[in-house]
Length: 327
Image (cartoon, rainbow, N blue to C red; front, side, top):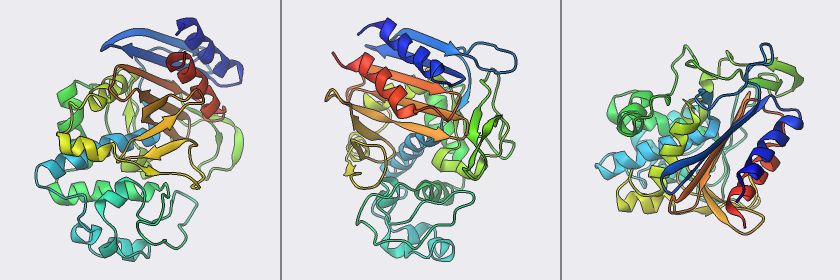
Protein backbone atom coordinates (compact mmCIF):
# COMPACT_ATOMS: atom_id res chain seq x y z
CA UNK A 1 0.00 0.00 0.00
CA UNK A 2 1.21 3.49 -0.88
CA UNK A 3 0.05 6.55 1.04
CA UNK A 4 0.65 8.43 -2.19
CA UNK A 5 -2.03 6.28 -3.82
CA UNK A 6 -4.49 7.16 -1.07
CA UNK A 7 -3.73 10.85 -1.48
CA UNK A 8 -4.13 10.52 -5.25
CA UNK A 9 -7.62 9.05 -4.78
CA UNK A 10 -8.59 12.07 -2.65
CA UNK A 11 -7.07 14.50 -5.14
CA UNK A 12 -8.92 12.78 -7.98
CA UNK A 13 -12.26 13.20 -6.18
CA UNK A 14 -11.66 16.95 -6.18
CA UNK A 15 -10.34 16.96 -9.74
CA UNK A 16 -13.61 15.31 -10.78
CA UNK A 17 -15.50 18.32 -9.48
CA UNK A 18 -16.12 17.70 -5.78
CA UNK A 19 -15.49 20.42 -3.17
CA UNK A 20 -13.28 18.47 -0.79
CA UNK A 21 -12.35 15.09 0.65
CA UNK A 22 -10.76 13.73 3.80
CA UNK A 23 -9.64 10.26 4.88
CA UNK A 24 -7.92 8.58 7.79
CA UNK A 25 -6.27 5.17 8.04
CA UNK A 26 -5.61 3.07 11.14
CA UNK A 27 -3.40 -0.01 11.14
CA UNK A 28 -2.86 -2.21 14.15
CA UNK A 29 -4.82 0.03 16.49
CA UNK A 30 -2.80 3.18 15.72
CA UNK A 31 -3.53 6.00 13.30
CA UNK A 32 -0.84 5.93 10.64
CA UNK A 33 -2.05 8.28 7.93
CA UNK A 34 -4.53 11.06 7.25
CA UNK A 35 -5.07 13.11 4.14
CA UNK A 36 -7.19 15.94 2.81
CA UNK A 37 -7.93 17.47 -0.58
CA UNK A 38 -9.95 20.43 -1.76
CA UNK A 39 -11.93 22.85 0.35
CA UNK A 40 -14.34 22.86 3.27
CA UNK A 41 -15.88 26.13 2.09
CA UNK A 42 -16.30 27.16 -1.54
CA UNK A 43 -16.71 30.80 -0.56
CA UNK A 44 -13.67 31.26 1.67
CA UNK A 45 -11.49 28.58 0.09
CA UNK A 46 -10.56 27.18 3.50
CA UNK A 47 -9.04 23.74 3.14
CA UNK A 48 -10.64 20.64 4.59
CA UNK A 49 -9.23 19.54 7.94
CA UNK A 50 -9.18 16.25 9.78
CA UNK A 51 -11.12 17.39 12.87
CA UNK A 52 -14.26 18.54 11.05
CA UNK A 53 -17.76 17.43 11.95
CA UNK A 54 -19.92 16.16 9.08
CA UNK A 55 -23.20 14.33 8.52
CA UNK A 56 -22.64 10.58 8.28
CA UNK A 57 -25.94 9.59 6.63
CA UNK A 58 -26.74 5.89 6.70
CA UNK A 59 -23.69 4.90 8.74
CA UNK A 60 -26.00 6.02 11.56
CA UNK A 61 -27.52 2.55 11.20
CA UNK A 62 -24.39 0.93 12.63
CA UNK A 63 -24.83 2.96 15.84
CA UNK A 64 -28.54 2.16 16.05
CA UNK A 65 -27.90 -1.54 15.44
CA UNK A 66 -25.33 -1.50 18.25
CA UNK A 67 -27.83 0.09 20.64
CA UNK A 68 -30.61 -2.38 19.75
CA UNK A 69 -28.29 -5.37 20.16
CA UNK A 70 -27.02 -4.03 23.47
CA UNK A 71 -30.58 -3.77 24.75
CA UNK A 72 -31.30 -7.31 23.56
CA UNK A 73 -28.33 -8.63 25.54
CA UNK A 74 -29.79 -6.99 28.65
CA UNK A 75 -33.20 -8.60 28.23
CA UNK A 76 -34.79 -5.72 26.33
CA UNK A 77 -36.48 -6.01 22.93
CA UNK A 78 -35.41 -9.30 21.32
CA UNK A 79 -34.46 -9.66 17.67
CA UNK A 80 -37.33 -12.05 17.07
CA UNK A 81 -39.94 -9.93 18.85
CA UNK A 82 -42.71 -8.78 16.50
CA UNK A 83 -42.75 -5.05 15.90
CA UNK A 84 -46.39 -5.09 17.07
CA UNK A 85 -45.23 -5.87 20.61
CA UNK A 86 -43.45 -2.52 20.89
CA UNK A 87 -45.23 -0.31 18.35
CA UNK A 88 -48.81 -1.60 18.15
CA UNK A 89 -50.68 -0.15 15.20
CA UNK A 90 -47.87 2.14 13.98
CA UNK A 91 -46.98 0.13 10.86
CA UNK A 92 -50.60 -0.49 10.03
CA UNK A 93 -51.59 3.16 10.36
CA UNK A 94 -48.70 4.70 8.45
CA UNK A 95 -47.38 2.00 6.11
CA UNK A 96 -50.14 -0.52 5.56
CA UNK A 97 -48.06 -3.50 6.67
CA UNK A 98 -48.70 -6.14 9.32
CA UNK A 99 -46.46 -5.44 12.32
CA UNK A 100 -47.35 -8.78 13.92
CA UNK A 101 -45.47 -10.51 11.09
CA UNK A 102 -42.40 -8.27 11.06
CA UNK A 103 -39.58 -8.86 13.54
CA UNK A 104 -36.99 -6.45 14.88
CA UNK A 105 -34.32 -8.55 13.14
CA UNK A 106 -36.10 -7.95 9.83
CA UNK A 107 -36.07 -4.21 10.46
CA UNK A 108 -32.33 -4.27 11.08
CA UNK A 109 -31.40 -6.42 8.06
CA UNK A 110 -33.94 -4.76 5.73
CA UNK A 111 -36.02 -7.86 5.07
CA UNK A 112 -39.21 -6.45 6.63
CA UNK A 113 -40.81 -5.96 3.22
CA UNK A 114 -41.42 -2.30 4.07
CA UNK A 115 -40.47 0.01 1.18
CA UNK A 116 -38.28 3.08 1.42
CA UNK A 117 -39.74 6.53 2.02
CA UNK A 118 -38.30 10.04 2.17
CA UNK A 119 -39.54 13.61 1.65
CA UNK A 120 -41.44 13.87 -1.61
CA UNK A 121 -41.92 10.13 -2.00
CA UNK A 122 -44.68 8.11 -0.45
CA UNK A 123 -43.96 4.40 0.01
CA UNK A 124 -45.71 1.84 -2.22
CA UNK A 125 -47.41 -1.23 -0.83
CA UNK A 126 -45.31 -3.45 1.49
CA UNK A 127 -44.09 -6.87 0.40
CA UNK A 128 -44.08 -10.17 2.25
CA UNK A 129 -41.81 -9.96 5.35
CA UNK A 130 -38.65 -12.03 5.10
CA UNK A 131 -38.88 -12.48 1.35
CA UNK A 132 -35.99 -10.28 0.19
CA UNK A 133 -33.69 -7.38 1.01
CA UNK A 134 -35.23 -3.93 0.44
CA UNK A 135 -33.07 -1.09 1.73
CA UNK A 136 -35.43 1.23 3.59
CA UNK A 137 -34.95 4.13 5.99
CA UNK A 138 -38.37 3.23 7.40
CA UNK A 139 -36.87 0.14 9.03
CA UNK A 140 -34.39 2.07 11.14
CA UNK A 141 -36.75 4.86 12.04
CA UNK A 142 -39.04 2.17 13.43
CA UNK A 143 -36.09 0.57 15.25
CA UNK A 144 -35.31 3.95 16.80
CA UNK A 145 -38.90 4.28 17.99
CA UNK A 146 -38.69 0.82 19.55
CA UNK A 147 -35.57 1.85 21.48
CA UNK A 148 -37.38 4.89 22.81
CA UNK A 149 -40.56 2.96 23.65
CA UNK A 150 -38.63 0.22 25.45
CA UNK A 151 -36.35 2.50 27.46
CA UNK A 152 -38.34 5.71 27.88
CA UNK A 153 -35.19 7.56 26.82
CA UNK A 154 -34.56 9.46 23.54
CA UNK A 155 -32.50 7.56 20.99
CA UNK A 156 -29.90 10.35 20.97
CA UNK A 157 -29.32 9.79 24.68
CA UNK A 158 -29.05 6.02 24.24
CA UNK A 159 -26.38 6.50 21.55
CA UNK A 160 -24.51 8.90 23.81
CA UNK A 161 -24.81 6.64 26.87
CA UNK A 162 -24.02 3.30 25.22
CA UNK A 163 -21.55 4.19 22.47
CA UNK A 164 -20.26 7.75 22.29
CA UNK A 165 -19.45 8.35 25.96
CA UNK A 166 -17.79 4.97 26.69
CA UNK A 167 -15.58 5.32 23.60
CA UNK A 168 -14.83 9.01 24.10
CA UNK A 169 -16.48 9.98 20.82
CA UNK A 170 -16.82 13.66 21.66
CA UNK A 171 -17.76 14.68 18.11
CA UNK A 172 -20.49 12.08 17.58
CA UNK A 173 -24.16 12.81 18.20
CA UNK A 174 -27.69 12.64 16.84
CA UNK A 175 -28.86 16.27 16.49
CA UNK A 176 -32.21 17.35 17.78
CA UNK A 177 -34.63 19.61 15.99
CA UNK A 178 -32.06 22.42 15.93
CA UNK A 179 -30.17 20.32 13.34
CA UNK A 180 -26.82 21.95 14.15
CA UNK A 181 -23.30 20.98 13.08
CA UNK A 182 -20.71 21.62 15.76
CA UNK A 183 -17.59 23.61 14.92
CA UNK A 184 -15.35 23.02 13.15
CA UNK A 185 -17.30 21.64 10.22
CA UNK A 186 -17.13 21.55 6.47
CA UNK A 187 -19.85 23.25 4.46
CA UNK A 188 -22.05 20.63 2.79
CA UNK A 189 -22.86 21.09 -0.90
CA UNK A 190 -25.44 19.46 -3.15
CA UNK A 191 -26.58 19.27 -6.76
CA UNK A 192 -30.07 18.10 -5.73
CA UNK A 193 -32.96 19.93 -4.13
CA UNK A 194 -34.82 18.68 -1.06
CA UNK A 195 -36.90 16.34 -3.25
CA UNK A 196 -33.87 14.88 -5.01
CA UNK A 197 -34.35 16.77 -8.27
CA UNK A 198 -31.28 18.11 -10.17
CA UNK A 199 -30.17 21.59 -9.11
CA UNK A 200 -27.17 23.88 -9.33
CA UNK A 201 -24.50 23.48 -6.66
CA UNK A 202 -25.81 25.00 -3.44
CA UNK A 203 -24.97 25.02 0.25
CA UNK A 204 -27.15 22.63 2.30
CA UNK A 205 -25.23 22.83 5.57
CA UNK A 206 -28.26 24.21 7.39
CA UNK A 207 -30.88 22.06 5.66
CA UNK A 208 -33.47 20.39 7.86
CA UNK A 209 -32.51 16.74 7.68
CA UNK A 210 -34.21 15.71 10.90
CA UNK A 211 -36.43 13.36 8.89
CA UNK A 212 -33.41 11.06 8.49
CA UNK A 213 -33.39 10.36 12.24
CA UNK A 214 -32.30 6.86 13.22
CA UNK A 215 -31.82 5.97 9.56
CA UNK A 216 -29.26 8.64 8.72
CA UNK A 217 -29.32 11.73 10.93
CA UNK A 218 -26.08 11.49 12.92
CA UNK A 219 -23.02 13.74 12.88
CA UNK A 220 -19.47 12.59 13.58
CA UNK A 221 -15.78 13.05 12.76
CA UNK A 222 -13.22 10.96 10.90
CA UNK A 223 -11.40 10.00 14.11
CA UNK A 224 -14.61 9.09 15.96
CA UNK A 225 -15.86 6.86 13.14
CA UNK A 226 -12.47 5.17 12.91
CA UNK A 227 -12.49 4.36 16.62
CA UNK A 228 -16.13 3.23 16.67
CA UNK A 229 -15.73 0.86 13.72
CA UNK A 230 -12.46 -0.51 15.06
CA UNK A 231 -14.00 -1.34 18.44
CA UNK A 232 -17.07 -2.83 16.76
CA UNK A 233 -15.06 -5.08 14.44
CA UNK A 234 -12.80 -6.21 17.30
CA UNK A 235 -15.81 -7.33 19.34
CA UNK A 236 -15.44 -4.82 22.16
CA UNK A 237 -18.89 -3.22 22.00
CA UNK A 238 -21.19 -6.25 22.00
CA UNK A 239 -21.43 -9.58 23.79
CA UNK A 240 -20.36 -12.57 21.64
CA UNK A 241 -23.92 -13.67 20.80
CA UNK A 242 -24.94 -10.20 19.66
CA UNK A 243 -21.66 -9.78 17.79
CA UNK A 244 -22.45 -12.91 15.78
CA UNK A 245 -25.95 -11.63 15.07
CA UNK A 246 -24.70 -8.26 13.85
CA UNK A 247 -22.34 -9.84 11.34
CA UNK A 248 -24.76 -12.50 10.06
CA UNK A 249 -25.79 -11.26 6.62
CA UNK A 250 -28.53 -11.57 4.04
CA UNK A 251 -27.87 -11.20 0.30
CA UNK A 252 -28.59 -7.88 -1.40
CA UNK A 253 -28.61 -9.26 -4.95
CA UNK A 254 -31.30 -7.83 -7.18
CA UNK A 255 -32.14 -4.98 -4.81
CA UNK A 256 -30.61 -2.20 -6.95
CA UNK A 257 -28.33 -1.33 -4.05
CA UNK A 258 -24.55 -1.24 -3.50
CA UNK A 259 -23.06 -4.03 -5.66
CA UNK A 260 -21.13 -6.97 -4.23
CA UNK A 261 -22.55 -6.62 -0.73
CA UNK A 262 -24.38 -8.59 1.94
CA UNK A 263 -26.18 -6.88 4.83
CA UNK A 264 -26.01 -7.62 8.55
CA UNK A 265 -27.69 -5.71 11.39
CA UNK A 266 -26.61 -2.14 10.69
CA UNK A 267 -23.37 -3.07 8.94
CA UNK A 268 -22.56 -4.75 5.66
CA UNK A 269 -19.72 -6.47 3.88
CA UNK A 270 -18.51 -5.45 0.45
CA UNK A 271 -16.22 -7.31 -1.92
CA UNK A 272 -13.72 -5.11 -3.74
CA UNK A 273 -12.85 -5.77 -7.40
CA UNK A 274 -9.57 -7.36 -6.24
CA UNK A 275 -11.53 -9.95 -4.22
CA UNK A 276 -10.89 -8.55 -0.72
CA UNK A 277 -13.99 -8.33 1.49
CA UNK A 278 -14.39 -5.39 3.89
CA UNK A 279 -16.87 -4.68 6.68
CA UNK A 280 -18.52 -1.49 7.87
CA UNK A 281 -20.83 0.82 6.01
CA UNK A 282 -21.41 3.97 4.04
CA UNK A 283 -23.65 6.97 4.27
CA UNK A 284 -25.13 9.24 1.63
CA UNK A 285 -27.16 12.25 2.69
CA UNK A 286 -27.70 15.58 0.96
CA UNK A 287 -24.33 17.33 0.85
CA UNK A 288 -22.20 14.60 2.45
CA UNK A 289 -20.96 11.10 1.57
CA UNK A 290 -19.11 8.91 4.07
CA UNK A 291 -17.51 5.47 3.99
CA UNK A 292 -16.07 3.54 6.96
CA UNK A 293 -14.75 0.06 6.23
CA UNK A 294 -12.16 -2.33 7.60
CA UNK A 295 -11.05 -5.94 7.52
CA UNK A 296 -13.09 -8.34 9.64
CA UNK A 297 -10.78 -8.36 12.66
CA UNK A 298 -10.39 -4.58 12.72
CA UNK A 299 -6.68 -4.72 11.97
CA UNK A 300 -6.99 -2.00 9.34
CA UNK A 301 -9.67 0.71 9.22
CA UNK A 302 -10.13 3.40 6.56
CA UNK A 303 -12.71 6.20 6.85
CA UNK A 304 -13.40 8.87 4.24
CA UNK A 305 -15.80 11.75 3.62
CA UNK A 306 -16.78 13.98 0.68
CA UNK A 307 -18.56 17.28 1.37
CA UNK A 308 -20.39 17.18 -1.96
CA UNK A 309 -22.92 14.62 -3.17
CA UNK A 310 -22.55 14.63 -6.95
CA UNK A 311 -19.29 12.76 -7.56
CA UNK A 312 -19.27 9.14 -8.62
CA UNK A 313 -18.68 8.40 -4.96
CA UNK A 314 -18.67 4.62 -5.37
CA UNK A 315 -15.78 4.97 -7.83
CA UNK A 316 -14.01 7.40 -5.51
CA UNK A 317 -14.23 5.14 -2.48
CA UNK A 318 -13.47 2.00 -4.50
CA UNK A 319 -10.23 3.63 -5.63
CA UNK A 320 -9.43 4.66 -2.06
CA UNK A 321 -10.08 1.21 -0.60
CA UNK A 322 -8.35 -0.60 -3.44
CA UNK A 323 -5.24 1.47 -2.75
CA UNK A 324 -5.38 0.55 0.92
CA UNK A 325 -6.45 -3.10 0.96
CA UNK A 326 -5.46 -4.62 -2.39
CA UNK A 327 -1.95 -5.71 -3.20
